[in-house]
Amino acid sequence: MKKIFISIVALSLLSNLGCKKFLEQSPDQRTQLNSVDKVAELLTSAYPEGNYIAFTETSSDNVEDKGPGIGDENREIVFPYNWRDNDNYTEDTPTNYWNACYTAIAAANAALEAIGKVPDQTAYLPYKGEALLARAYAHFMLVTLFSKTYEAGTANDSPGIPYVTSPEKVVVGQYSRGTVASVYANIEKDLTEGLPLLKNTAYKIPKYHFNISAGNAFAARFFLFKKDYDKVIQYASAVSPGNSFANILRPWNTRYNTYTLDEMYLYFTQASEPSTLLLIETASSWARTLTPRFGYGQVINNEVFTNNVTGARWSYKSAYYGQPHYSMLKWKEYFVKTSPNATIGEPYTIVPVLTADETLLNRAEAYASSGQNTLALQDLNTYASTRILNYSATIHAVTLAKIAAYYGITDPKEGLIATILDFKKKEFTQEGLRWFDILRYKIPVTHRIYAVNGSFTTIELTANDPRRLFQLPTQVTLSGINQNPR
Image (cartoon, rainbow, N blue to C red):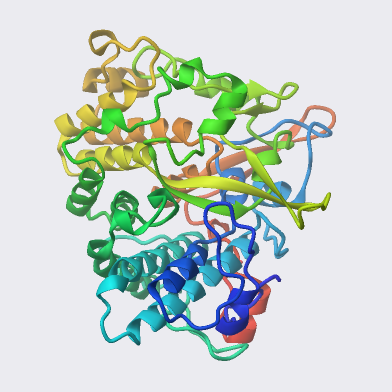
């Protein structure tokens, strides 16, 4: 059942959620949430089952036009590359993700309402924490993708997104978008209230839920958007007590370097990977998007594997599916049949939405932004030590002198941030996270569109282009909500 409106009747919502979840089974229907187990079961549905990667990655500067007739030209890829609004509610679209986030929020709110009715909430507290974090996360993703980016030191009074805190009782309710400031205030309230309640022992497999490390990683990302750098450092550091990040980053230059292509596909999204902090199952075709016209091609692949500021190359893996179609070998599709004997079903992609790798680089940025250059360099070198084949601290260490020479930037802060953004752009290729940095730093994006004769036109997304905000679904106007200007 496709959810078009924000307003969703909670009772019918949860009976129509996908019941064939990989991570943990969601309830077939919500009857009475009268036990800890039932609330815990409901919260498996409090995570967006939509996927943002197709439209955020394809909107970014991590993709290219491979040429007319070269690759698939699905609407889900063509529209974001051209920064056109796509009001389809099929998988891998902004509308689908909007609906998925509010579906997740409805589940979190139903759980919180049930917990609020219990006289003794002691046994429920870890799940209250999870519900608050899940609600904060879904709203954060919505305000990030569909509203103007938060700017520290300003009023942030542009339209936000509806912050829903109670189960809906009507089919089509009326809502206000509030402001970006009010949405951020609500996110911070839920985040800071919920984080101390989390307990890893509450879950069979913590990485399928907001465990303690995932909660801290989300907090670090949130406060990076707010430019509250002390809190970024605080929460990022809590992800790896004792500052042992080197032991939990993706082992690209050791274990991953020995993997076959099939093994890479298998292990990248495994809960057993130390770098993975939170996994979300998404109903998505992203894993099978191997040969798009607009995507990861020869030009981007060459950029990834060119010598970097360390003087060496990254030890990432990529493969091609007939040049110029490349893949970073991150995504394995899980196909769920409609019934045990069926030949049809739905594709799913498991996404590590929070990782130790992003968290360390977020902390490095916070150090650099607050003038702690030595600590920023330490984080960058910890990161590089797991990425450069045959890494040598003597030969490959990142220094301010190397940064100035490589990027042509003499200001230490600017040079460090340029290095961090460059590292993140390469690290999260085909993961959609580059879009977040494009938003935060108002980075302009240029796309080329080639004609059959080899000529091309250039389109640009400028720093303040209104198309940086993905468009709200048309149907939200029924709930009294205005769409973004165009």
